[in-house]
Image (cartoon, rainbow, N blue to C red):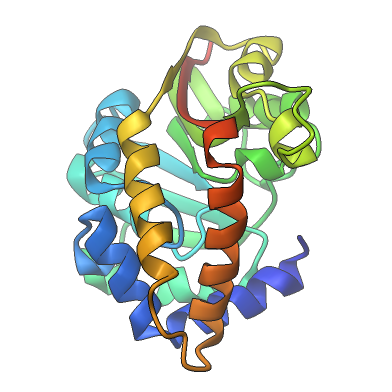
Length: 249
């Protein structure tokens, strides 16, 4: 999972109206969100409520992708936004999409990684990481870096998947290793909570099943989506969809 891999993936996504229509309709999202993840609109509302970003405060979106979810939350909260992703293509697309949310003056995007976001310490009121924490090579190290970004009392929300049974070899090693709540606790966060989101899981399953009925017609983004759908459906009941929240001390 290199930056170059994701550069190509994001370039395919922006060139595929069919993929954007599929994700937007099945997740019930406003079209400007342009999702590259699997959080439905109800989930964005949950995330915004859990983050509780103050008006004019700073939200950091780590592994922001094309920036849609972070910009949606920042618009709702009337907050400032910094988005970070290790894909230069994702950062460029997110920067070009700020006007869709009216955030030209309040949002910036830059290259960085989960374990090395390249941002100043203690400036953020809230941090979000949507459907990407499972990619961290070291979850505790990544969580510690995210804690470093937050002021005392700042809040974090992570969404991801984790194995129901960490010894289940039918689940990828990445998801067997993923432990968002444990990583947040080990990094020194307090008030750590984690909850399964069965409705999000069901929405994504419906999206994958529908995707497999469509004609990809030489569309690389749709072909990639169908390949991911096949992999995901095969292990669907072996993983759970979760949202973790915590507070910086």
